[in-house]
Length: 241
Image (cartoon, rainbow, N blue to C red; front, side, top):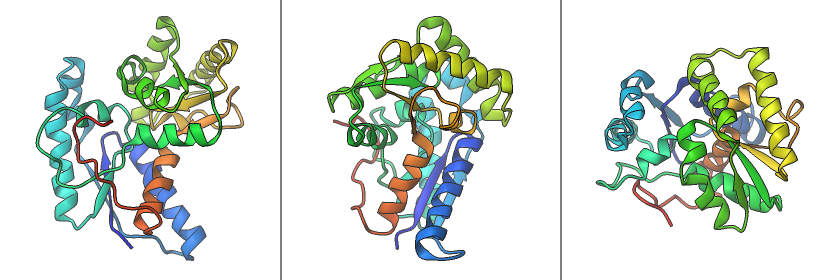
């Protein structure tokens, strides 16, 4: 089996990815068993000034250091359970030290497999307003729909002030449900939870729409690669497609 490296950018989402990856091992390989996995996390606080300045190159340099450390630990490939981070990982630059799975491609593949036609996108402002999901979904004939500006502001604030810091409030859950209901009214047939902490707040039983859980989908794709069911990825940073 191959050694997975988890490139953590925010702790809560990365921890959920690690748990989901290991739990799939318990189910499929037997008690206490899973492929080797190493998680590396440089504190998000190191990157936040660069995010606020839209300096994606500076963020890429920080993430690249994590990938180097994963390679040094013996990982064969990496996943980054942070959707927004892929805006930085896609910046031009030297190849990362390991090849990686691209989270938006994983989510878009699942949306296509489910026959989705219009997917609502919930994440940070950088993800909701950026090119990642429109590109990946539209390449598969699926429309991407972001909430209106006032709802994007609410979704983003809750992520940055609460979710990445391990705070999951009932009033915030109600706000997300309201936003998803508005996406459903605009014709969406699923909602992509593409900040990797959102699945800790919005579960399928409370969502007004079927969910595409980017964290668990990322973990499942990594498990398939780690167990040699799918080939090693070839993407090593920079633009895709």
